[in-house]
Amino acid sequence: MRKSPAIAATLALLFMSRLVALAEDTDRVLRSPPIDFLTSKKAIEFSLSDLQQVGDSANPSDEVYVKSLGFVSLTETSSAKAGPEVRVFVVPSTGLKNFLPQEDPNKLLINTHEIIIPILVNGAPRSSLTLGEPDEKRQWRILRKGLPDLIRLIERYRTSEVNSLVVIPRLGLKFLDDRQNGTLVLIPLQNSLSLNLEAGHPILAQEVFALISEMLKKMPGSVQP
Image (cartoon, rainbow, N blue to C red; front, side, top):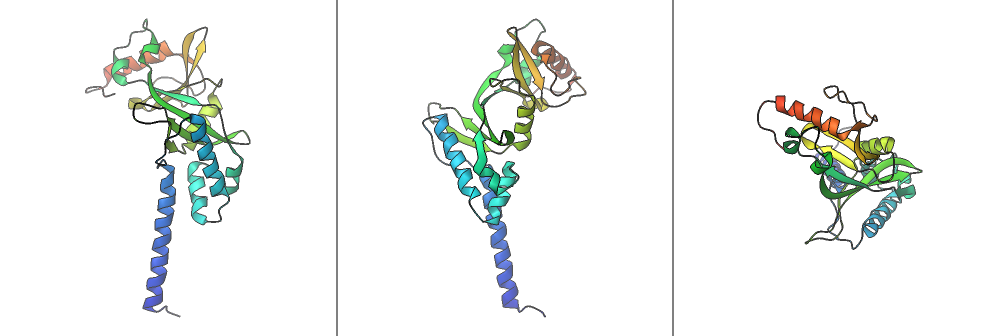
């Protein structure tokens, strides 16, 4: 039996409203609340409480939301706990291009003043929360949620609770830092055939930066950060 034009129009509107609701809810992954927090602990508590409230929902769009964050199901969010923080540093390619093997690699690390908080369920990584440190204008704030693939790699290869994340944006490379007898060591989070890097295998930062420096010098055009 064919539906009347009025019924078809109503169903179409309902369908579109559901799509809008799903899009808005999924967008919560990228939006941070317009709230500043006095401490990082307060920001983490706020986010965990929000997750637990979402977990009590029967709304299908909330299921989409938590899965986009990295959770397997809504019920998992009630068991979500925060893991040890991971500070984020970047290494601009402009500095790498002129790096010499005898130089101190620590000088290339730039503190982003961002901290990633792993979100764990029964000890297993599911999602993360990225916080911005206070500055002259803002207190602690939530910058982003999710990044499930990254947090799984971090938790898989981290060697201690004080590891930081080191990112080389131009090349898409990510490492965890470590210290061996006071020397900076980098643990690749992914394989790199061009640099002969194997995920999880530590390598001296001086050696990595020297290899990347040679690579950048051979690349055509100017080097962007």
